[in-house]
Length: 130
Image (cartoon, rainbow, N blue to C red):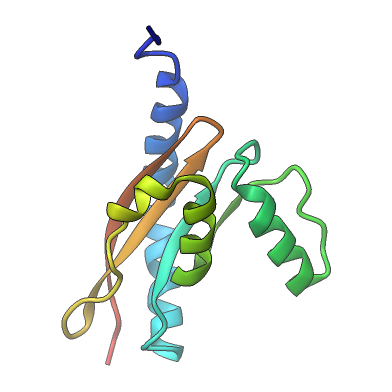
């Protein structure tokens, strides 16, 4: 039998990561939505030790020419990129990942926080000024 509290610290950390970064991610999502209103996005927080960080690091390094080795990531990314990471590493979470979007100027940004031992999902509302 596994210990139900074995990964409690990491689960708590993923919750804290969502809380710490939600407002910054909402502001970034609003800015992106003003420039690309039809682009589905997700707020992504990857702990540096998360195995899921490897494909994202490779994509970031390719796009920027900088090394992201051993570093985490906090940012708003295209939904398709998050789907590919989760499909490869945590397919069950795809059932719970909310769609981005909303009505009028108020939208919802799905959030994904990934630690070495788990994934936590959330969402944050944001406004897009007309």
